[in-house]
Amino acid sequence: MALQEIGMATRAAQRRERLYIDGEWLETENAIPVSDLADGGTFAQVTAADPAAAHAALEAAHEIKPRMRETTVVERATWCETIAEGLREREEELAEVIVREAGKPISSARGEVGQAAERFDRAAEEARNVVSQGEYREGSTAGHEGWQAIVKHEPIGAVLCITPYNYPLATTALQVAPALAAGNSVLLKPASKTPISAAILADVISEVDGIPDGAFNFVPGEASEIGDVLSGDDRVNAIAMTGSSGAGKHVARESGMVNLHMELGGNAPAIVFEDADLADVAGNCAKGSFKYAGQRCSAVSRVLAHESVHDELVDLIDGQMDAWTAGDLFEEDTAFGPLISVDQADWVETLVEDAVEKGADLVRGGSRHAPEGVPDELGDQFFEPTLLANVPHDARIVDEEQFGPIAVVTTFSDEEEAIEIANGSDLALDAAVFTNDHKRAMNVANRVDAGAVRINGAPSHGLGDIPFGGNKDSGIGREGLDASIHEMMREKSIIL
Image (cartoon, rainbow, N blue to C red; front, side):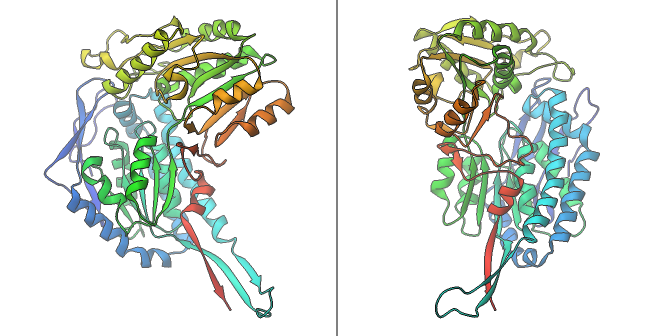
C-alpha cells in the first residue's frame, strides 16, 4: 500500500498512498499532499484519481455486482469481522495518522479507531438480522386467492461513499461497513484533507480473503476533478455522504435515479429551561461546543437559555472553559488542536466578529491563539475556546453552521419563542432540551424540527445503533448500522 511506511509515533515518516481499483494498487501523475496538523509541513501524499481512474473504478464496481449478489450473508459478515480485527491490529498507526491529518488529540484518535472496528463488527450482526427477516405473504384481494409470495432483501448494487474530514475513519466505517455487509460493491471517495486513514482501511480490506476484486475501490481525489464523474454515473445505485449542506445539494443535483443517504450540516440548539440543573447543563454544553474544536455536525452550536437563567448559565460555562485547552496532540490530556484549515479559522472569526458587532458580549476568547511550541505555520489555525453571551437573534452564528470552538448563548422568554428560534435555521440535524419537566421535555422535543433530540444531554450519535440524520438542509434519510443496511438493500417479491 504505502510506498514508505509510517515511522515512530513521535514523528511520522513521509508516506505515499495509492489508488485501489479492481484489486490493484495504482498511481496517476498527480498527488495530493496531506498536511501534518501536529508538527507542521506535510507527512504524506496520496495519488489523486483522475477521471479515467474514476471511470475504471465505476466499471469495476458495476461489473462485480452479479457476483456480489451471489455471496452469502455468512461470507460478508466474516469479511466485516476480519476487517474489524485488521483495524485493531493497526490501532497505533491509525491513531497517529488521524492525529496528524485531522488535528485530533491522541485519546480521541484511539477512540475513533475502536469505534470504526466495532462498527464493522456490528454491521456483520445487523446484516444477519436483516437477511433473516424476510416475509411470507398470501394474496388477500379478489382474484389473488391462493397467491403466495416471499419478500426478501438483496443488495442495491454499487454504493458511492463520500466521507468527511472530521471523523475520517469512524464515519467511513459507518458507510463502508453496512455497504459491504449488505452485499454491495463500494467506491470510497474520502475527504481530500484526510485520506490516509481511509487508505489504511483500503489496505486492510485488500488483505481479506474472499472479497472479490472490484468489490471495494479506493478513489481519493479532488472533488473538482472526479466528484461529478462519480456521483453522476448511472452505474452508481446509492450514494452515502457525510459533508456540508452545500456539497450535499451539489451531489444531489448531479446524481440520477439513485438512493441518496446523506448526513449534512448541523446547527444544534440546546434549549435550557429555568428548572434545569444548570451545573449539568454547563458541562454538557461546554463539551458539546468545544470537543474537537467544535468541528462536529452534532456540536452544540447555540445555547438558548431562558432569560431568568442566562447570566448564571454563562458564568457556569465560563467556569468549565479552563479545562478546554489546546496543546501537543500526542499528550493524553490535550483537549483539542487546530482547526482543519486557515479558511475554516477565517470563517469562525467572521461569525464571531459579526455577533459582537451586532451586540453580543464577548465573555472569553474570540481570537486566534496558538499554544506554546506550535509550528508557526499552524498558528493561524488555532482559535481560542470562545464564549459569547446575550447574542442577538439576528447574528449569523445563531442560524449558520460554525464548526468552531464557540459557545453561543442567547435568550428566550417562553416556550414558543424558544421553538421559533430553534426552528429558524435551515439546518435541522440535532437538538437538546434541558428541563426537569417531563411533559414539557416531550412537547418541545416533538415540536423542534430536528432529526434527533436529546433530553438533558448533549447530542450524540454514538455507534449508530439509534438512527440519526437531518431534516431540511441537514440531509436525506437516516444513518446507523441497521438503518444504513436497510437503505443499502432493496426488496424483491417472489410470487410462488
